[in-house]
Amino acid sequence: MKINSVFISNFRSLSDFSLNLPHKLLIKGKTGSGKTSVLEACFVLSSGKSFKTYDIKDCISKDSQNFYIESLFDDFEGYSRKVSIGYDRKGNKKIIIDGNISSRKDLLKISYPVVHSPDDMFIVSGSPKFRRDFIDRICFVEDDSYFDDMSEYIRFIRNKNAALKEKNAEVVKYLNAAAVPLIDRIRKKRNVSCETINRKIGFLSEKLFSGMKVFFTYNAEENCAEKLEGKLEKELEKGFTVYGPHLDNINITTEVGSAKNNISMGETYITSFLIKLAELSVYAEKNEFPIFLIDDIFVFVDDETKKILFKEVESLKNQIIMTSSIENTNNFNNIEVFYLSR
Ligand SMILES: Nc1ncnc2c1ncn2[C@@H]1O[C@H](COP(=O)(O)OP(=O)(O)OP(=O)(O)O)[C@@H](O)[C@H]1O
Ligand SMILES: [Mg+2]
Image (cartoon, rainbow, N blue to C red; front, side, top):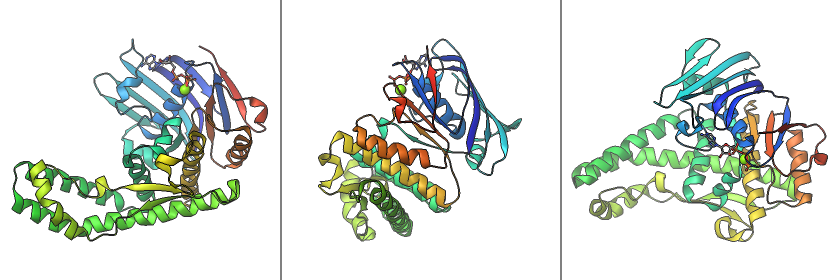
């Protein structure tokens, strides 16, 4: 996938902005000049969502009623596409692909982005939710039926919570028993995805950092029927579920134990970046090359590490758009630089 051009209107601080995008681009500019907003707009137009906010209305410029983004891009199969997306304050959205009103699902069939921003350091240092979301994304890509499993699981949790609220133990027991195979299936698929991503991280860390040890660990092999029964009393007392895949712990382990509490800021950055490179390599295996958006590239790492990571980024087949307010452009050989001024 490659975005060739974007036109951005009333999106955050960008009122009327156009840019032609080469294969590799660094956007430089002062603090608050709109670099992240350009990346965010590229993310929105290739996924229908933002990576900065759950409420996409936040992206509408403060004095406007709607934003509009238009782009010409080559989709995963190399076909030229014209995509435009608009959102207004009332929550109306319009996605148009090649002149046809389309859905977000249609859009995701022809494009999706991968982003790395400093916020992704939470995958390493934040709560297990960040790691579950990451591993689930790999599951969605690896296994077409995972989406249906997760939809079924969300329905199960909703029904179970309703029964728990009413303290209806019989219904909860019935729902639990019916959900056991589903829970086992979700956990098995997550285990497979952890193994896949660990293989990719292992390969990359061997290549780039002579074998820096980083891997996901997911210990959810236990007997889930027994566990559901054991938690029943507590759940009835609380009136909501306290156990299941939506609360499972997924860890990242390094040489010094759990990454969460033990590694440095720079190591956290490198680890989160390796994880995203590993994700890209899962997609590459399926011959899909999403755009890679890198916000505030290589903050928190030393010059030596930057060089190693730059070389890797430069060698990727993916289109890459990155931002920095500080980066010295001497490091770049094949990367164009665009200076953004307010
Ligand atoms: N809805 C909005 N309407 C108008 N301006 C907004 C909106 N949301 C954010 N902004 C402003 O847009 C400006 C650009 O933000 P952006 O995050 O793109 O800057 P940046 O160039 O990435 O800065 P930094 O180098 O600090 O990361 C900021 O001043 C921000 O406060
Ligand atoms: Mg920024």
